[in-house]
Image (cartoon, rainbow, N blue to C red; front, side, top):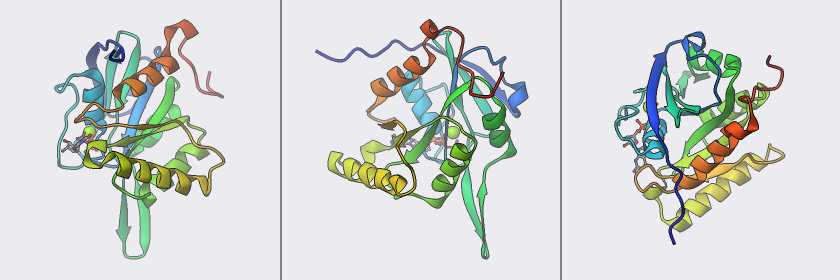
Length: 213
Ligand code: GTP
Ligand code: MG
């Protein structure tokens, strides 16, 4: 018997250039973030079974705004612009826009930030620096490996294991991790179920982050 895939209904709501122009924070919300081109928009289309929902492009930097999608009339899935690392001479700088910074710090109904990582790449400085920033700001996170179809099952396992080991050099414990492919829909069910659990209306009011009223 096949597994039951939760039914997903999706609707585009808005594209905002600032956190205070986002929809009223009255529903549970999760956001996808990661380096440009990692597959954030593709993953949103895969989860919602709707290839026309989020704009996908092979050119990095396609998504430039905070995009809200309403899922099952219950919770928001948010597509964010990518971040990157620039090196000018000896000065390295993690570049992520003020839009992202303010949204993540201020958005009171943001329940989890899913950081997307291309499964083919060893840990990159930009991602490690971004993780540290999120943890410093006490943002709940999960990790989603993308583009699993590009590797064999064994290579996927090896990459995920070595990535986790790298994180455990400095972290006490690991967040939830998921392995996905927008092309094969691998990991879709697990990820949807996890988000639904985070946002389930049976838990009452949308969860607010610690310290936020
Ligand atoms: P920005 O909005 O520019 O930050 O990019 P993004 O992270 O939203 O990436 P996007 O979804 O636009 O995908 C970037 C490229 O990767 C596109 O060419 C996609 O077709 C490709 N891609 C995304 N996910 C997958 C995947 O799971 N498998 C494969 N093979 N290609 C993928
Ligand atoms: Mg995008």
